[in-house]
Length: 194
Image 1: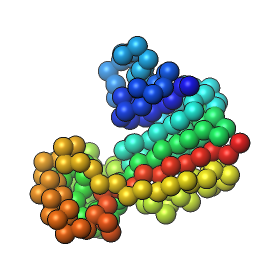
Image 2: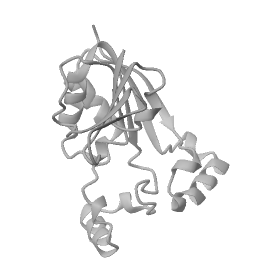
Image 3: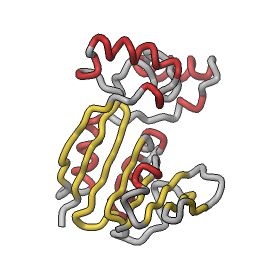
Image 4: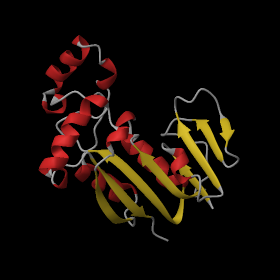
């Protein structure tokens, strides 16, 4: 069994014969832990054969790719028939940007948001394209009409992996029970048709 993972590679490494982690920023192509290989590639043009992987995961990656449609199309190209795909995406309506810890930044009109980000030297956030859950479902069914969205889970990250500035609001949201309505993000489990 071979699996491709565009982020959080080690998460799948213990249960597969081969794991490939893809990122545009790795320093070099390396293999570690015997079966996990990390390569540098653009998510819109992957160096893999059609139908090479049993499982493809896109964790916290699509918001960083300007051509989200192309990246999802390319992920399906690498997925075997009846293969599985996991897509994790942030909740665009969460009141704190999880990349920076900035509160309410995603609620501002783009022109104000971009000016503020430049002012505080967070220009790297300007290019983020937070995917909308409904848009992602439409995109998946457009690219792969026979794909079945098996499950959609609300995600609440453990405090250990979120930015320090977000931990206070996380504790408050847990205490108030808000995460049931307003999660950090979503995990889509998709099954490709035969």
